[in-house]
Length: 333
Ligand code: PCA
Image 1 (tube, protein in one colour):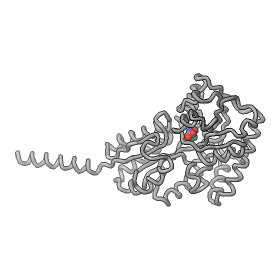
Image 2: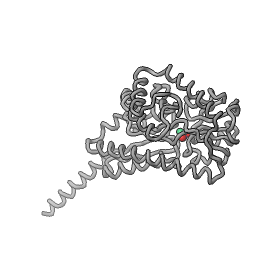
Image 3: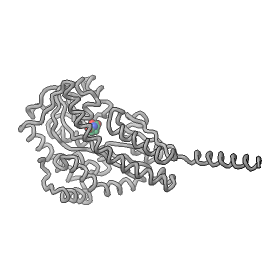
Image 4: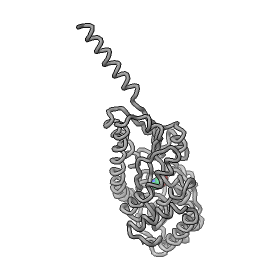
């Protein structure tokens, strides 16, 4: 009897040991800091995964570019150095113009349209990621992009020579089309870019303005509703294949919940951030007619440039989207 008890104890501890050996521990990198609702959502996703898999999969999220620089996140997941990553989707535009379709003015001007654009482009984006051994899990939009300046933006001539911080190549092109001088700067480098006098203005969202305490550097926010760009969260196919089926499906379920929660959080964060900007002395306004017309011209040129680079599949995804939301024109409405 005693011997049997000891044997079963041994058996139990052997099982516990085996399952702890099998439990997967993933590393994930995001360029955005803890003040961002994206990072908070992603950390919630990791928590959700750990809970719903009973610890079979734990994901440690390294935020603020602390582990891997933004440009290295996708290559690192591809190589298997890390298991998962989050990036600003449009920074991948050198790989394919479809990745920057969400940074074109006049394509999607509301959360509903931005979500429909994600649905229409998701199959193509998933295919392109699969070619690199990657699986997209979910994507979440930032609030719409606007312009931060250190004086009221009332005349398009103010763009002449203005050094504007932009988060991706397409936004840099947009700034050039306006006559400004663009600089690509990571979100986390915004305070330094302003305090060292490298930039005078920036294009980003209410959320990033708030998270980066824009009132320390600028006085005005022109809420121009330029576009609603997305972050995408993805994993390595190889890491995924090593999970058992139950864990895989818990992971995918948590990803679907993260997507839903993230879009909601984005709307809420937009409201909250606009209020925070105003409370801290930033004058928030919408563009006047002259500025609007200049933004429209710069946007049209940007769109033509995109078309000249996009392949048939990307064009098709865009026209599927347009058909779905009943939006014919490239122009802003
Ligand atoms: N914030 C990020 C991406 C878009 C946004 O609103 C940034 O400015 O870098």
